Image 1 (cartoon, rainbow, N blue to C red):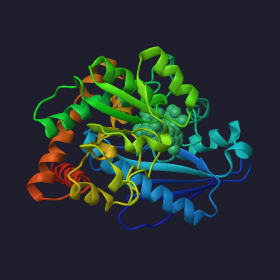
Image 2: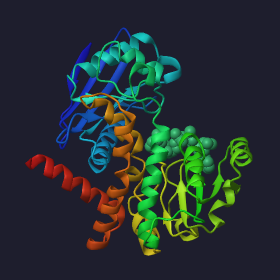
Image 3: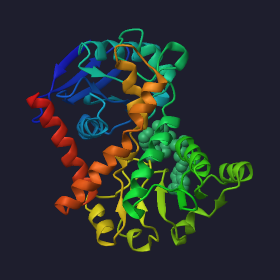
Length: 350
Ligand code: NAD
């Protein structure tokens, strides 16, 4: 196994691994460990080149630093990528080699699931390193993060309601959820229990029908969902849905959902602000899953009660973001970065 370092300004460590017999070609980026070891998922994609993979791992690891800092998990940011087609290249040898590669950083980087990597793959990685999180509940790990992401979003929506209406009251509030998969489906149920009037849409019509008949939600076709007037629009499907085309069409008071990278561009938060629409930065409101995983790393190991207490802090974190945004007159995504920077520099001087 050949491990070599790549020098990148602003990153604590970036390493490349080649392992001929298993075909492993992978990169790990540790962006910042000021607040703790760098946690971040492992993804596998058929990148066109190592440069493309490097761009991805650098961007994602930096994002994890900010996400963890705002979520107050006591962790830093990192990420790993395996170059190759998951359909052709996956093998036990490959994931064992990846385990040894992760282990070579001695805990500076801790891995988890991400795109094209599942629990069976991580179980093999685990044979070679203990620096793996998000395995099954049966193995003492924290299990599927989706229900915790959904619960965290409910706490975030409490902060949103308080900001818009001055009080936390879900009763009768119209909440439109786009994407009712693992996270959005669970969220819809939780919000209905809180008294909200939930409207759902998804390109998977069978899923919409199943949820509507079980829980009595209203539904709207995905193509026309932006025509619906609502209190909060909650994207839980895919990224880039908030852009120059959609911002003028929105008929809501806030955009607050779990989908990653909701803004096509960073500047689109300014577009929302100019329309008087409150934006809950995605990585702040969707942090329930990472907070849940971070509890595995506490000295006592995973404890669901502790996890839920910590997930509840998403409400305070978002409130802080809204306060910074108002006091400095900046969009909420800039305010979230500011909060992250404040926490990292406090960690540096501690
Ligand atoms: P999922 O695949 O279980 O659900 C996504 C749902 O969105 C599916 O039902 C799919 O049919 C639907 N969908 C896809 N494209 C759509 C479109 N164009 N219009 C309408 N519906 C569409 O995924 P998930 O785990 O529920 O994650 C949802 C989002 O939340 C993703 O962006 C994910 O990155 C993000 N996220 C998830 C977690 C987690 O814990 N699972 C944590 C943080 C962020």
